Length: 319
Image (cartoon, rainbow, N blue to C red):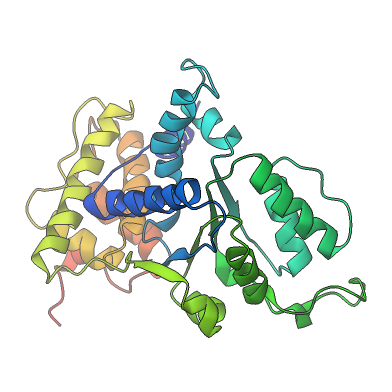
């Protein structure tokens, strides 16, 4: 395996927990509790709307791999020796769907059924009934819908779509699923998706929690500490996952401040810059990632993708 391929693969396995992520996990747990304790009541939802690379999808991934997998093992649904990622993908306690492209009501039902490993055949109403029936039969406690910005109004359907397809709209369909008490939901998307999904007052009124995953603000002490802690942990993870012989110190000097400026306070972009720097360091035969490797990574990858200058080379510009 090439050094670059090894690093790219290893980064897929890195998990870093912080208070914001764990708070979101607590909310997911509480929504599941509602399913168990009030099975026949209308359900409500939570949302995460934030810029890309803010850690939204990783929040869900870590939840599935930890708390949900623990619960699945505890219930005897899977033996302990099965890989946690495999359990996370096969369990049906929490269903996670990611929407891509133009999605109609029928497509939404198909995505849910695919996640439930149920064959999807029939018209829109038949597929929705299959969703309701199997969600209840399988004991699904929470549905997480990621990338909701890809949901489009039904008017964008292909001209070959069924003539009698329900034209009520995606938001209304989701609202009806909640009202019918199927199970609670979490909706995740970029900031702009909030208006797309919650333009319906009734759906907006069903939001129990709007979970914040906005860019971390370096001017706010608690958020600055969270960002710096992420940088420090990421440096340790590089050694922990076998990429380097020594720990990489991303807390040294102005490194956290420079990474903040480059990433705009989005931890996902910190990981992408460090991933590029790790490749540079590995090819140079370095035992760890140094500041010079981060500088090279910004030149190679971040400019002009997410920033127009290199703070590692010129210093952080003052506002």
